[in-house]
Length: 493
Image 1 (cartoon, one colour):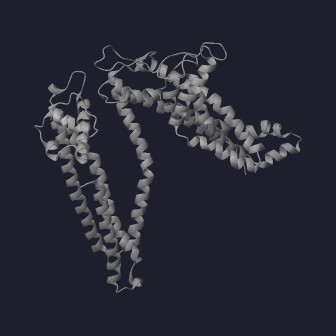
Image 2 (cartoon, one colour):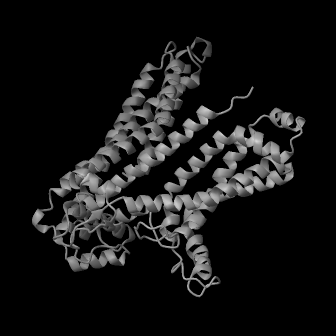
Image 3 (cartoon, one colour):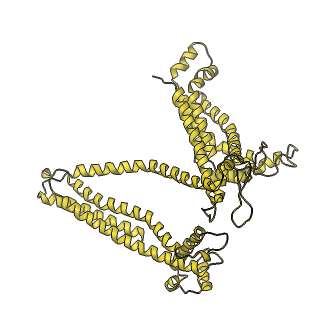
């Protein structure tokens, strides 16, 4: 049974249970609600929750555990002798899952019969042709072992889904029966429902914490595995980044210093653009602009924060890069040959700086507005001009918050990916020339995990080490920003 139909079935049982619970509670007292401990609806909600919550928990648990058992059962069908040189069991399982999805889609589109989808002795040429006719991308060297494993994968998935549907519906019906049996006039339905809703709210609030913990542990485990295969000293202090995947010959050089340098260099250029423009914008909006101008200008600035980063990346690739080449390139307006191509540090830095302007301006504007008007009035009373008041009173009072806003923008710049991929290039190098192409940690994480990756190799596991390094850096910046804001924040009554 498809998951959507299973959810609908559980919700129907729960809705019926709500009506039955409410009706049963009223019938037990002859329709007299004063003889009930709780309002009739609470009895209905008690039944509803005891149908939906156990069933939902079972579905989530099943969907988490099911892939592991199916992968283990299917991987046992693939002999090591059938795995090609330069490949691994993980890559073979990726091909199995892709082929299984292709079989399912081909059957649904009518390009493959159900008999062919389950026949272990199927003709490979005809089978591959049916998949391609359905628009499914499969390997050109599809083997009989992969086909049989994919068919087994689909069979186990279908059987597991059927078993899950039966058990979930059975659990829903048991929950319905138990809740209806509890429905008596003196049953404390309101207390039970409120405690259940409180538990659900606590669970929802815990999702963010649990997700963060899961991400951290995932990074830690894979990073530790990487350092078992690759020397930590060479990673943290190596000055060359040259991964060489299995089957391509050579040994990999996985030094992170060129990537960190590119990350910080592009971020510094971005902050050199964003901080002055954002800070001056915030000063103008908070101190000089009229209410009419502010009501229009501030939302227009904040629109920049809502533009997808891929759009900024295309802007860097198609507009800013060629414009810079026309100025600083060979035959450009300045007559110099500094920038050979559109992808460079300065290209990504300029566009990223534009993206960061609303982060700096909006936060700084809120911080400046929080400075009490009494400080300004006192400065004016002593004979200071408006500009002197801003420089000598307002900005010093708001400085800790402004510094925190800048550090938060820096952490946002360090984690940016798409602008770097499209605007800065992919060259990992240590250079001070802002007109050369460079890359960052996030861009290399994407490239290392693009396509089928063998997670037993250091070339794939290095992405997790890069992610852990980036996580520690951004966490450190955020901690410093919060420390500065809290320690030096001015308290006003």
